[in-house]
Length: 635
Image (cartoon, rainbow, N blue to C red; front, side, top):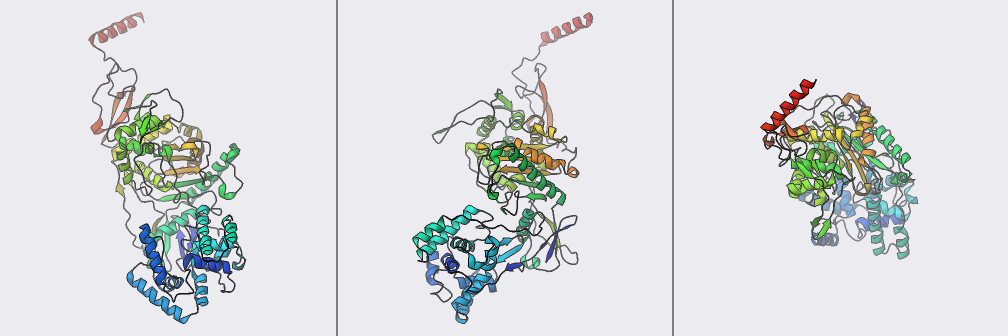
């Protein structure tokens, strides 16, 4: 038993190693035929015909995998699975596979088939309840359907059997649609085996997936704990984690975590109250949201809220969902643009029609605008779609894709014009990590849920090294942070000041087509937080990121004053300030009526003077002096 500690430290949970298992033993006679048939149909249809290994099954799996060019089907029998899980280590080696086959034959020689099946049904891993693994069909029946195994219905039995292939992937608590698809595959396999009539199959296929729900045993930050339990296994060897007396010091700040949970629930409740169309009766269909709070320079996760109700859904929308970022992706377009342009460069905000693969594409701004020639800074601040597409076309879509490659998005990014407007899917944690690059002087850190692990004597255990890599220069990161600060001072997030955010903030709103996703990402040198709001099924929320996600972000920040200050970034040596004409974006002269200060990469300091306005000549200067003298004499 390992106590997990936050940096305070305050104990937030007891974490158990692989021995932390929960099971309810059942005899083979208590297990209904439907469940037995479902398990056999899903995992080993020839169980009662082979002697531990099934050459026919191996050949069938080999043929299927070769035909699809990927691993689609395994050839292991139930007995082989039992041997692997009960006696062997999980590594995939030829020697382990040979030992597995030998043990399977030995087991079959010693035990009766029903005895082997009974042991299997009581040992098989079928899911996770926090840090506790659910083992055996008896415990799974209680966990998923709150009933003894003998009372399972046919669809419920098929659901449990379908979990064996991937308990957390197909869990009804994670994704009901995916769970139902897998259940139906099992039902159809039972029908092919003759264990179901066509009428029984038809009725079972139409049944809803309705898990019972379960009680969370007082876990604090449950979504964070789930993420931690997975991440720690990637950073430390299994034999180390199995040791007694270990203390895991997390990056979690419980004050920030509590504030994030309260801000999310308050914000979602307000949205539902203000718009009845957002209300849903069923828990699994309710409006959802998620928050991740990080320290940009370290990658430490201070808080993680993966949904509004962990009991209703353990699906972590920060780490598992894939949503379109919309305008929240635009900063990566503008970062790419800094290779050729400057914050003062002019972009066309005029409507245009593009021909894409023989089809027309006509992007539009969210709101009509009479500004048809805007600077890069203004285009990003006001989130102009037309100007952003203009920039993307000028620099080239492939260059934007190359930029995103360095940010390690796990979802594919294609060079389509709509990429400029965030029309592809991202994992929210990865989007937050991308923004950390701007906040951390161009460096990208690895999102960490734990700081270190110590043994019972307080000795620090060696951890796998996690790379911190430079993705862009500190100069470009500074300029991006400055441009994103304009979002709050003159752009789509100007309402922050009315919500008590008086300190300097860089930020970006995000809204997708049909208002399916609402985003807000904001940061200072010390803290970054991302908020997402939407429905799991993609229904519209009928509002924008600035109206749905921004208020939640502001509410959160106002309740954690220890992380906010007037501190701001110092201008790097590679950045200079110059006076430019606000109309042309080029170096201003005395004839420019509205000059303004702007920052530039040192190598892009403007040297060309504004050609739009007339530069005062000698006669102009004389007339100005005469006029000044005349006015002075009158006074």
